[in-house]
Length: 258
Image 1 (cartoon, rainbow, N blue to C red):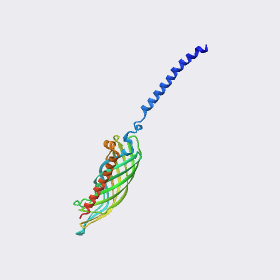
Image 2: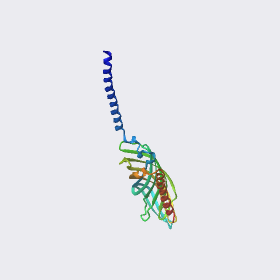
Image 3: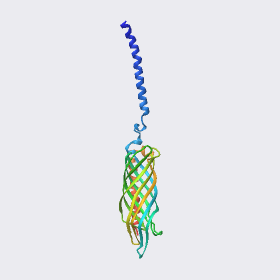
Image 4: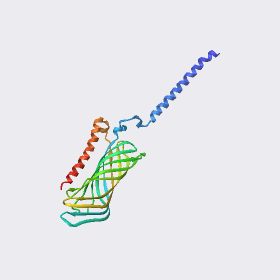
């Protein structure tokens, strides 16, 4: 009797093993199906693909303590603007930023802004070339960030320019994930304006003046950049930075020509 039961035990054991293997196969398939897409290590998530090229524009809300403009030919006649708040002037900027992770970023930008003046005939133009570093908090759809920006600023007025003035000030913003490679952002900066422009034609003095800079724009990482070779990516980043430096240098040189 015992010998007759052994074949029956083997017959029952084989189907049970098949059931276990089938269950394991189902579990493995479910795990792979539930895996997040970024676990596939697509090119968009490589470190060298985390560069974004941006454009933003906005306004300066100027808090004026005192701005005075004096013609060199008539030192006795000075135009003064005192104690004004929320004087609005425009700003536009281009930038290149690197986000090695979702918690920090480094950026390079060039800003062009119009500053307030008591004389409508003369419009002060400010060129600001800067670097910034921020820390961020990635949430589901948005990414708030804050940090510091350091820049080199020059001001052109009436065909003459100021000295190169270093400046460091805070910034903060909120970034929205519009698409995988497109981000919409709003940004705030605080810019102190306390300097003089002394030229052969005009003298202008900004004292106890500052600006709240509010802007909005886009950061985009184009598809062709992701598919390009490493050397071409390096060239694109290098040339975008060099273009900003060249534009700032050219504007500074032209404004210094009285």
